[in-house]
Image (cartoon, rainbow, N blue to C red):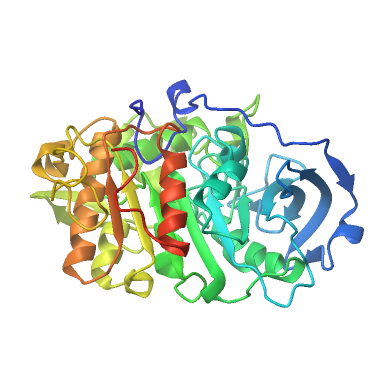
Amino acid sequence: MRSSPRWLSRALTGLLMIAGAVVVPAGAARAQTCSTTLPHPDDYGITCVSVDRHLQDNGSELRDITMTSTAIFQASGGTPVIDPLTRPITVRIYLPKDYDPARSTRYRSLYLLNGGGDNYDEWTTKTDLVSLVDQARAYDGIVVMPTGGMTGWYSDWVGRTDGYFAPKWETYHISQLIPWIDANFNTIANRSGRGLAGLSMGGFGTLKYAAAHPDVFSVIGAFSPGTDLRGMPAQRTISDSMWASGAAIMPLTDWGAFRVNKYENGVLVLDQDKQRRYRLESLFGPYTTTVFNGKTIDDWPSVNPAELVTQGKYAPYSGRFGLYAGGCKELPGAPGNPQYADGHHPAPKTCAYDSKAHDDALSGDETILGSYVSDFDKTLTSLGVNHRYCYGTGGHDWNSWPDDLVDFLQYAYGTAPAYCPNA
């Protein structure tokens, strides 16, 4: 049973920082120097700072690599008010049991993107990734859990923070981190061996990156993702997140320079519609207008999954695309019922999904998110994109995402379960 915070992001209030199982890495951390652990620690715009290795009870390893990137942060619109401008970020890497850097058969890689208000370690502090991979039994590769910013929205920001700097998250993840991982670990360095998945804001990021980089990934999974920027709950959530944490990488004592606000003649603009448009333009660039459900609204079609899907951007992932959401009001019957969630059919009427009814909602929950995901599923199906779609009664939290990940790993890398999780 999931709770009901805002959708698309968990970054806005204390409700979004949902407590989960805190998993402390097994064994004492073994600090090592970058040069003795990695063959190419400083490359692709990345400079390695430190390496901490956590050996797990099952023989696997969680390896934390702290680094700096030329993309996080960059000066934008004036002289940055923070010094130093470049900030350290961490990537946590799961290495399977008996990982061998010299093995002739290279390892697959799966990149897991964090949700809003969280960090690279969420899959090992809110749940136990090591146990989940063991449970799935289908995946034998490495898992890369990068920093994605508390509310960076997996974008190269077009605008800036109030402190005159901006992150370039897409540049960091796609152009820097991925080739850096391939240079330092024994991975399949092409799309055939590379997967991408994420939850909430990270689910949106997964859909955004997948559409833009079909040459990079071949497998994608989106858990409770934001799928349509045309809905007002999405735009207000994103706008609020730009005020709440903006470009912050982790919780700070002084948010001022990291926030995004519109000013006119040095005075903070109080009109929240103007702020909303300004903040989304800071992320995604100039808006366009479109008619959606009979209303003229702002839109960013170049990054909006609901419109990218109509352009065929997800066709390259046909047969290797997992889509998950909760908020279904009532499931029909039990396993064996033709309408029960088996990954192959649209959500039934008993789920009470109705995206049109939520266009003007001030905030959202998993039911609203699930309604938009249901529409997204129908579009994928109409275009012949084979995918696994799982709906359930849960909410927007860690009571369901671990099971979603296990199901996704089994579907994408092994044999799909007969029925969806979280039903």
